[in-house]
Every structure is written in C-alpha cells, then in structure tokens.
Image (cartoon, rainbow, N blue to C red):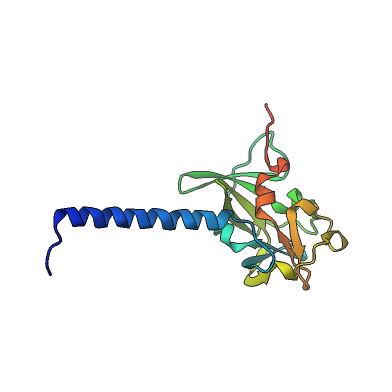
Length: 183
C-alpha cells in the first residue's frame, strides 16, 4: 500500500474532522427539532398507578432501578432527591406528585428514567415500563382534558389506547421544575 504524501494526509484528516463535526451538528439538531404532524417517533411507554404514559424515547438516556436517593432538605414535595450517577449529580422527580396523579398505593419499587434535553438532565420516577412502540403525532387526540386531569401544557396528546404522551420539552423547561427557593 502506497503512503500518501504528508500534505494529502493532513487534508484528509481535516476533511474527516469536518465531516464528523457536521454529523455531530446534525445529531444535536435532530433532538431539538420539534415534531411535526405526520412525524413518527419512538415512544417509551411506562405506568404511573393504573394509567399508561409515554415519553419520546429519543430523550431517554438510561433506565435505572430505584435505589438509594439522597433527600434534599427544603425541597418541593415532588423532588425526591438526588442520585450520583458515575460522578454526575442528578435530581429525581416523583412523577406522580409532579403531575398531580393520585397515588393508590405507596411502593418502594420502581424505576428512574433519565431524560436529557437542551442540556437539562433529570430522573423521573415511574412504577414500571412496558417497552417502546412507534407513534404518529397525527394519531394523538389533542383534547386531553376529556381523558386526563394533567396540565395540558405537559401533554402532547392521548392515544386511542388512552396512553398519555408527555412533552419532554415542556416538562424540562416549565416554571414548575425550576426551583428558586432560598433557605
């Protein structure tokens, strides 16, 4: 195999870096572009009590079993506490309390679903998860008040099977999630 001259080697390395930067930019943009009618997305379906909910699976980074959570003093009741995940400190939200869903029974079982969007990473506590399935935005019912009492700002829509599809962007950027209390 013949060696490339040094100048051509530098150009090919620069070209490779340029291509990789462009790909990285496209991947980052794909997570921030809002879904449009007709768009299909992969929904991560989970349960809270007796109801089924879903997140866009593109924003989920990891699913962890519920283990020790360090409580935070003077925090709102929906903030369960924090976890240390490989050196990164993450807040964990009690999704039922955050969404004002009545708890039928208190359980120490569950999972923490880690989501990340626009640089914000949080864990949401869910009871169980049933897997992923493809959904189309156009198939979602847009008047969720008839089916659920969850704030309409957090809901993208409801499927025919009564799965409430939550809007990760609204959840992570809403005023309710920003805690500005002083001790």
